[in-house]
Length: 234
Picture 1 (cartoon, one colour):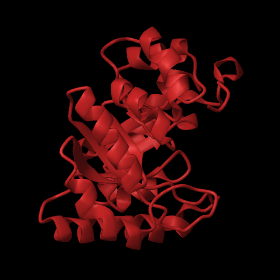
Picture 2 (picture 1 turned 180 degrees about the vertical axis):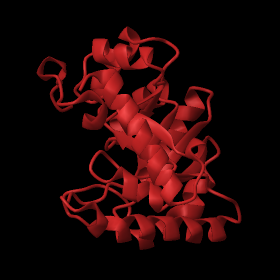
Picture 3 (picture 1 turned 90 degrees about the horizontal axis):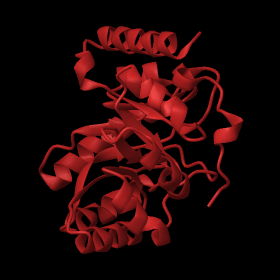
């Protein structure tokens, strides 16, 4: 299956999942995870109409974004170290992986110096996996007001990475918990949070059925990662 066929197939699956959940497909945004992909592959997918891309590492994004069409939009979706916050603020239009008040404060400081306001999502480790980053739900609720008060950040919602499983239905409760947590956050803030970024190649249809507004797909679009495009960890 070539790139165009994979994109069409993914779009059909998104529409089918929305139909099952009685949702408007326009409410779900497809984010193409371009980690490990060379600029040529990104440009090719952009030529098919895909505009939003996500990178996991600041250093990799820094080397690639300038080689891709300028009209593309970029989200930071991987773990962000505080010492990379300045570059992240410069490169990305949204950071989806804010997982502590300390990181939020550093991003706010960098955004202030850059004279910009940055939308963010708060990453939650819903399943409590030791191998993954993200807020514990109770810590998120405790720090939410402080993060929301930072003047150069706009909290737009929540993000999670669900545990891997060959049976996506098994992790439906994870997505449902994130949706319910978003509702708790909205009650605390007294304002709506528009986004739930959840669902990847193996489970995005279940995530859409549970309310995802952003799904982050890599191999479903690109196929296996291009070895020459891989960049070492920061």
